[in-house]
Amino acid sequence: MTGIQRGLVPGFVLVAAMLTAAGAEAQFRTPRPDSRDPYTKDARKDQKNEAKQELKDAKRDLKRDRAELKRLRKDLKAAERAGDRGRAAYDRRAIANLEARIREDREELQDDKADAKRIGKTPKPYNKNKPKPYAKIK
Image 1: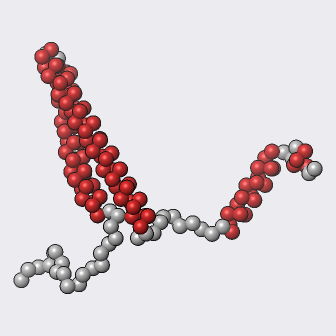
Image 2: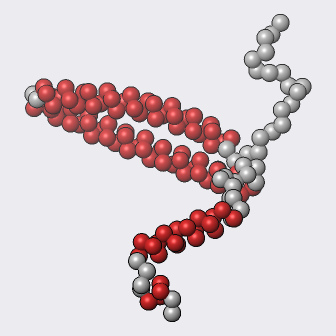
Image 3: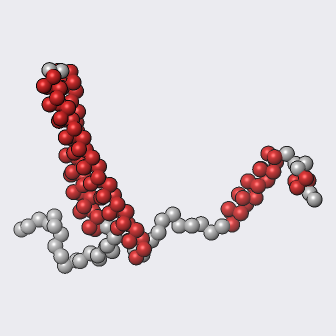
């Protein structure tokens, strides 16, 4: 039996020895690529699935915001009936902020839909014969 097995070596020395050994092994390992090649079929499939999931999440958030807006409008109506000006003003402010956020989310969702169609497809080579869309017309 060695001194480590019998428990004669303090714990911090043992941990330091283990960390040093792990660091030495890490020096000789081959480096792994950070990301997959975007042109492989699996990578394109993964990108497409991620884009679909993000699109679903964005739609779900938009629906949740619309339901919140509906609830705030009901609260506003109830506050106006009760004559509570403070609560009505608070609800109006919240409705205005939420409507602005819904507009932004809707525009972002449209952009994400357009991007989702392009994601997962291999890029096409540039066609030199095709005129550029920003070329001046003479």
